[in-house]
Image: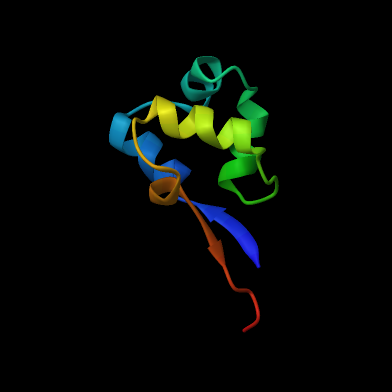
Length: 69
């Protein structure tokens, strides 16, 4: 299983950069980039900060996929 996300899509909807999101949720731009690329699994606190920023639920941005293909 792998944590995946639609973070890039949500950023595009709001027309913000990785840096703008990072500043808003007190993370680095590199962390946002790593989350978007699936190279870093964010903590629950980070997930909650991001979803609160977008005013949506966790499952609208983050989901678990089954990599047993």
